[in-house]
Structure formats: structure tokens, C-alpha cells
Figure 1 (tube, helix red, strand yellow):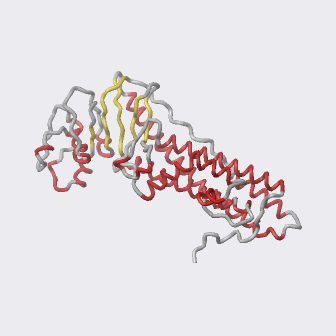
Figure 2: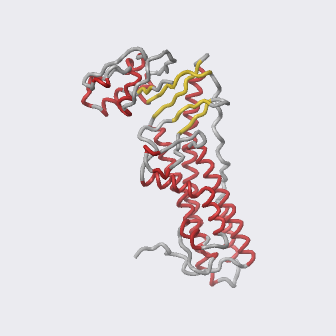
Figure 3: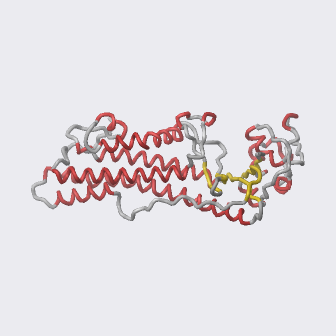
Length: 355
């Protein structure tokens, strides 16, 4: 199986100014075949003789070229050459493209936690014997809305990711419909692919912030002061609504935080990010890669699996977050009806203040 990369000469000239006019024109890159050697002036002998299709791969990765052999060539329009990098991984039987996974059903209403705290504070404000809960009533209005702010950001980022998948899906389906007997696995690298990863980083950070706000929101369920962060609360508390957080931590939060810490503090997934088409038993899939071992925290150490893919992971994470929101809301409302919430109604603000 051969591996080729086509990249805009303008991009190559910007990255390798010393090569100047020795780089081919866009039309030459498109026309170049596997059996048409292309020598680059000024390059070491060991790099000479690569085809135009292999040029970018050699410059970027210094890979060993595959032996010349007859294989379907990816037909690239000038527009594609000017805007993207593309790969051709050899011919496969023509198959239909599978639909993208469905987005969660986003509610037009506030998260369940916000609705429950509003219900509690409205009930408190309607009573004449609850003046001592004035600070809690204000807390119950403010912090759930901070929590909602981060969840809305996560929803926005997920929708943005999905939109770019839809555009890529339509592009590849269109390309597929133009072929009669052969379809090649391939992909493209554009700014939109980077935007998918940027949105994903923001999505993870928003979910992480929402979890910390959720930990702070359930603080009044305990008499003693609790830590205003998800991880610290899960370590110190052992009963009440924190059990829901601890369960979520073991099921999905740890992995989410591993991804978030890796991409925010250490490294992106790669330096050349691509959205690819991959064949499966049922048809072609659109995929953006995500490592299975984010704690490696280095591009060279990442491993990948067909079972892990960016959009599918983001959708799963959002569904987990929604389920946690509903579980915590139900638990808090149950405690309030029993008279066990809030157990603490003062000193609820400025917990994270630094002197």
C-alpha cells in the first residue's frame, strides 16, 4: 500500500524558502505519477528521485518512499491543491459512506441542576421564615448559571465540530459519486481540521470547568466547607451527592481530564492534522484521530485505535455530562424535600479567593 501526500507549492515555498523556484507548479504536482521521478535542486542525493506526489511526505516526515507500482492515483483539482494536503492510500472497492453519528438532543431549557436550584430558591423566597437563607438563595441563583455558561460553551463547541464533519462528509461523498468502480482511502488537511481540534480542546476545558462548578454547587449539602474543585471533593467527601461525582470520575471523567491535560499543557495530537476516510465492513467512515494513550503526552508516544475517534468521543462525553447533571439535580431535589438541604447557608462565596 502506497502513501502519498500532495501539498500546495505555495506552502512548501513558505516553509522552505531556500528552494525557491525549484519547486514544481501546482499543475506539475497534479500531473506527477508514481513512475515519473522528480529531482529537487539542492537536495541531498538520498532525497533525490522522489515523485511529485511524495514530495511533501519526504520534506515533512523524511519517510522512505514506497516502491513504484501501479496503483490508482488520486485526482486532485487545482482548488484542492491550493487549499489542502491530500493522501491516497491505494484503491478499494467502491462503497457507500456511512452517516455521521447523531448529535445528542440539545434541550432548549437550562440544565437540570439550574432548574432544580431555581425551584429551591423560589420556594425559599416565598416563605417568611427563611431570612437566614438569604445568602444561599443568592448562591443558588449565581453559581448554577456559571455552571450553565460552561455547558453552553461545550454544546457550542460540539456543534461546531459536527458542522465541520458535515462539510467534510459532503465533500468526500461528492468525490465518491464521481468514481464508477474504484474509491481510494484518503483525507485532507486544511485549517478547518485544525479548527476541529481547537474546538475539541475548548470542549474539554468547558466540560472540565463545568465539573468544578458542579462540585462547588453541591457544597451546601455538607456542613463543613468542601473543596471548590471536582478532584478534591471526590477525595475528601464520601457520602451524599458526591457519590455521583465519584462514579462519574471512575467511568469517564479521568479519561476526559487526561485528554484535556495532554492537549492543553503538553502537545497537540500532531503537527499535520487530517480528516480521513477509512473503509470498514459496512462502508466508508469519516474520522479524525485521537490517541488511546493521552498520558504519553508526546506525539511520538501516541497510539491509535479504530475504536477511538474524536467526534464519537466528544458526543459520548457530552452524553455522560448530561446524565451526571440529571443525577445530581434529582439527588439535590430529593435532599431538599427531606429537609436535608442546604446544610450550610453561609460563607458560600469567595472560596477560591487568593490573598
